[in-house]
Length: 119
Image (cartoon, rainbow, N blue to C red):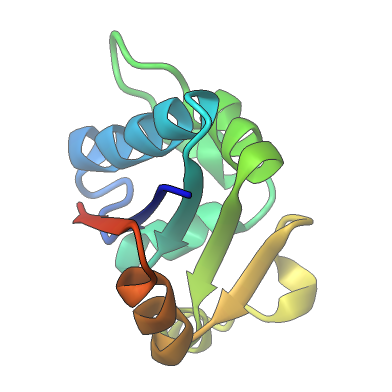
C-alpha cells in the first residue's frame, strides 16, 4: 500500500507553507493514500482544540476543515519534543492526535512504499 508522511514545521508564522502541508495531506487521504501528518515546530499548536481556526489564508481551505479529514482517513502525530517544549500533554490534544517521537517518524518514513514530504 502506498503511504505518504507529511511533516509540517510551519504554523501561523508561515501560513502559506503550513496550509500547503495540510492541503497535500488531506488530498492524499481523499485519494485513498495512507497518510501520516506530523505536527512539529510551530505547527505543534494545531494539535490543540480550536487552534486550526487561528490560521486564515485567502483562497485556501481552512485547516479546521482539513484536519478532521486527515484524522478520519489517516494519522496525525505531534512531535514529543515539540509538545514538551510547549507544555502540551496527552490530555491537551484533539481526540485522535497522538504524541510520538523520532523513532516512530523514522519507522514510518522508511516503511516500504512510503514517500515523505517536509513543509
